Length: 422
Image (cartoon, rainbow, N blue to C red):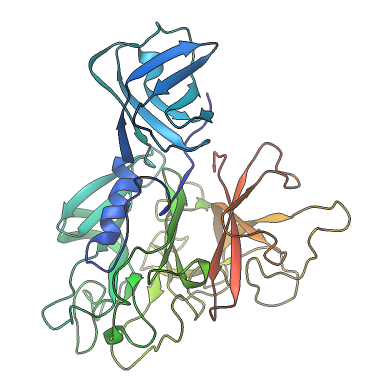
């Protein structure tokens, strides 16, 4: 059976949830992409011929070739489930099915299609706040706790908009953390979730509305932000801009989920990448619209904003981590800004290398599933899909550009969109 665990989404897809400068926008988007799906359409006719099911939506569907859709409602089970779209017209799309179901399909209710989500669950929720968890049986089930609500009565309504984020081992309810969490400071146990002292609201953050300067300088106004999300049922990577009208040069780069651990039986190998920004006023000045200070995953060995729930010993508090790959310059590297020529002279090709996770104490914890390090210099435009990578026969890669310093200094990261990642 074809593996469909890996999917990617972006803000330009039809029916995609939009992120702007309102509290809750980020969790609304994550609800759709991780759990619920989007762009729901009623199917007027569903037929079968020559191994293919063809769905007709007379008003138009806007699904894309290679997009994964979820079909529901057919009495004939072969039509139902997740499928990769193989061909489209304005009013039809086709996908492969097994067996020879009756044609046309019948239904006791109605036939429907939507863009399939990654397959996570919302374990706990309240207004603008969620605890997401992987359904996968091999996942330890550690939670992403995210609070995209107003930060308190003293936080200005026009200031920067961002979500508090952290890894938690378990919860009794949406307001009660049980077990380990990351980040965590025993002397200030709630500082990631509440205002602990003056001019401070939270610690590790995912931004979606901010202008240059401090957080109280503003949220860059309304308008839809540019976002890209790629992942599977245990890990996802998120790119999102802080203002409308920006392309790759305004993106933040975040992630959450399970790495591929080198330690057998690892139960704490859940990783988070965020912005480590404790102070909101008069500290940590941001000169550019997106990330500029080494946060994100573009800089090798940089541990800022990156936490694993516990280190490889499985005890104690969290540990910080960084990414690393083949070292071509005997120093820190920037993904997609490498010094290897493109195309590579010996085989006229693009080279992508695995990305490893290195704890701050030096130990290699594992590999970052799905993410590949690019040692050549931005060889393609943003969100190009390629399939001619050396040593990766049969796999397709999405190449995403993002800001890593000033507005003109971009990086590029490759993601396997064929799967499986593990």
